[in-house]
Image (cartoon, rainbow, N blue to C red; front, side, top):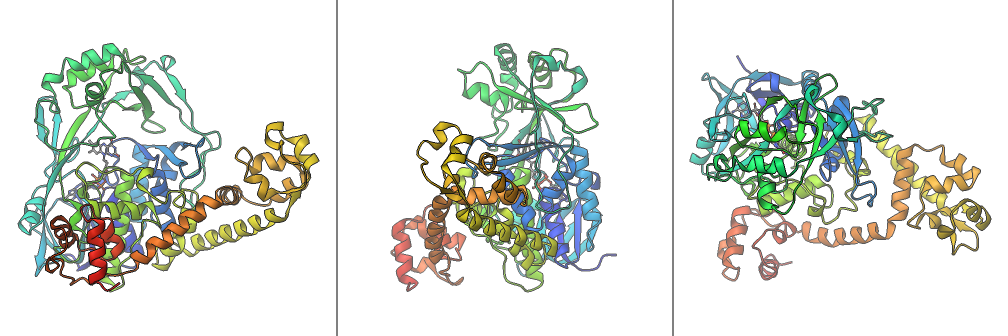
Length: 621
Ligand code: FAD
């Protein structure tokens, strides 16, 4: 009934979709096995993509030839560039999305990708021979052969849903939990753990009084995620709103604390610290008498509203009473209560940097199964696992991104070397080279790499090269073009020009913190005309590169230093246990994680600087 596939992807969530698309695009035969084809790319929680550090990841996925950016653009209902008032390293694109359209666009994209077959069923186990995966077993007893398998089970492995004192099995509300895979992997020697996450109630937008809330509009000039021309920016946007909890809401919620699975010990798994439930917030920040609530539409044509900031697993009657005490929610009708979910994950220190498991060859893990949280974190892992599964089948070298290449590199390096005890989400603070890893230059950093492995198209490469060349030319020209003090002084406020006494190049003028190309072009019609030849993204790029040049150069030097360690390979057979001088913890961690380079070894928590110098001596560096 089935051929032998190159790659089987288990799970049609954000990780699974990227994995299946990438592997097929790279010329492999792919079978996407998922429990329910109607929930492909379901947004389990908020209908939004991107945000701080996550928006950068989406742009990186896009630059490499992945799909999350394109799908987000096609299903977007509002766009905002967060942190615009801060430096460009912090600018983070975020979209509000139409939940149903997002899922539909992903399904259409996969159906339109040659090489992707589908099978709707629960996968109950793997077929493993001599520590190598050779296929999967399905719930109705079929065996499907494959050269490699990518597991992306999300929150479904032994998922347990909690609402107050009620608890029942499920991978998401209304969907069954996946059984069998954890148990088999543990038998094979894998370590498994338990985590939890939660989601707020969904409500009927027709029952809300928006006049009592603050309006939150999208950007006046919305941008988009994808660098490609496949999508365009929004012409029209939906508004969101902001409201607040109050003392009465908190007191009502507290009446349910004795029935809360969070507080009475029924939930064992650790939840995301930075995305706490409302009961957690009240408990931890008792001094605060209000918390912000974002009121977000779930799509263009639906009245369903996502109550962002009100994630809870309190009993449904308490949720209902409390939510109606929020300003604007007095007559609120609930579509469904919030809930918490506990699920199995596998500590990611059991993986290689390719996301292949160390214990079973050709078996890859991606997404929430690795202890992460978030669509973007899942999507980028799916992409890397899909690429590497495909390359392993094709006997090509591993595809790895360094910490200095991309947030994706930071994420995978953190997971593999440090592991995670609570759901891992990306922050800009996790990236030491964040001035290099900006959202605006993801294409310049990664398109060539994506193209070299057969994922990013020729058009993408050409577009990126045009942007790169145009930016270089523009920067060069701005170093020559000069403005007279008269035109500057007559056009700019005094505080900007106090020290300008003689002709100055546009490049030098741009280095002043308060000046940008938008204000400079108003000073001189010739410059205005010259700049109007360039697209906005080239103008932005040139401005950022000129303004932050000295900081960017400093980070580049640091990267060069790091790369010398990064390029020093450690043989895979290296016997750490045979080096008595290594610390006990360092020895154990190195033996377990088996770093591929000295650079990777230096980032493993528990490996001390002393361990590193001992290693350096033994490796003869
Ligand atoms: P998922 O999107 O969960 O997809 C898993 C897929 O695998 C599903 O299609 C499922 O049907 C399929 N599947 C599983 N097991 C099998 C099997 N054995 N056989 C066949 N198919 C299988 N993220 C945040 O960033 N912030 C939040 O606040 C947040 N809250 C959340 C609240 C809830 C209740 C849930 C469920 C998730 C929440 N998330 C949140 C997490 C976010 O949804 C995930 O990080 C993201 O969806 C993970 O993507 P994934 O591809 O790893 O898994």
